[in-house]
Length: 549
Image (cartoon, rainbow, N blue to C red; front, top):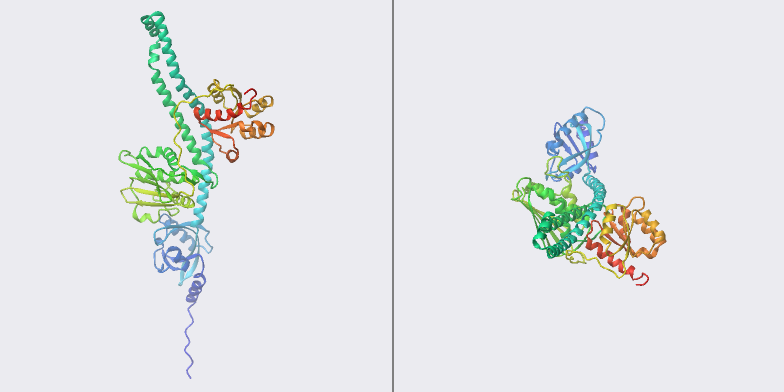
């Protein structure tokens, strides 16, 4: 009787390879075995991670999945692993998927015997999303630090700009009045001594030349005032961009926000392209202004960089706004070099960048997309190599949509005269600003000055007959918030008459304070008309309670 034929036992190497495959094929992390730059085995997780789920990686070169900048490092590391019996320490690396996109992995390696010869088993865990989140947190931390610095600088700028602007506006008003008075004086002199003698007298004093140049002087002071306003707007825009609050949302005027961004990016744009603004009538949207600022600034700067230097007369960056169904649509177009077709699908991938090393992290567009999506919107891109690009942001309008107020009038301010002069206590640690306000208000208001919060306590301890208390918010030693708390406790009748001035509430406590109080506040630099309107509105209520009124 013949015994059944027995299959030969597997060779030890075959058993080892089979056991290895059985062990690792079901692992959730990617495992690739390679030798001499070729892949010998890849488990199911590796095929899924790299996009070869229905194909094989076996036999392919390891360089196909290794980022070009890391190939030398991988070769050195492979040699070190083969020469050691220890598990290699984890490191982060970039690998390339079948579709060309790049992902970040944590990878370790171990020397193994595979198919009868030494090889390296590399185990990789996808950390792309983790790195993206950490990068976003780091970016937010950097923005927070920049925001604190920018807000602090803006605060320091706003104090001197405020009194410069107030004095210039005063000059704009008073110079024509002085010219008229001087002309009237000349007429009186001419009537008294005769025209010829008057000419001699005024020529000797060079007064006629001064009178003739008065219009030019007014024009120069007006130009200086506009320059001061521009510096103030830049400081205010910096504060808006640098705010670091959580995802707090309010009504945002997108057209006004884009103007701020274009002003901030002016230095990047002016040597590359002209700017065209095609703003349509659009409603306000509920959004986080600081985060939208980050999106638009990134897109505008990218447009500038896509053009390059040297031909601003031939290139254009166009910013358009319109209503598109239930969305506000923002188009940012450039006449730059465009985006290659093979890069379009990966444009918003974390860490993908076409910029040279050191010029971009590859996170800008990815973060922009996340911010826009967090607002319920989307961002699209159309581009053609050599003909420029257009990025389009859609943001939902929401339920409530308000139109925008017209810009403030440029008419000269009128200082109201009350039957009885209102009394104003001005509390500010900036000496020049205090004296400027005192001179500006002296005709219509009785002004009392305090150079600190502590000095204000001394004044208010014996004299509380004020119609307005105009107080700076951020002062050393005793802040405007502490003055408010003292008044609330010791002199509550004065509380509704308090008006605050702020060059930037750049601390969380100050921001929360302004949100909670019902008192009016002025953002420095403010103009004379704005100051007078606020003081007059509060003073009328105060005067009505004064004895004898």
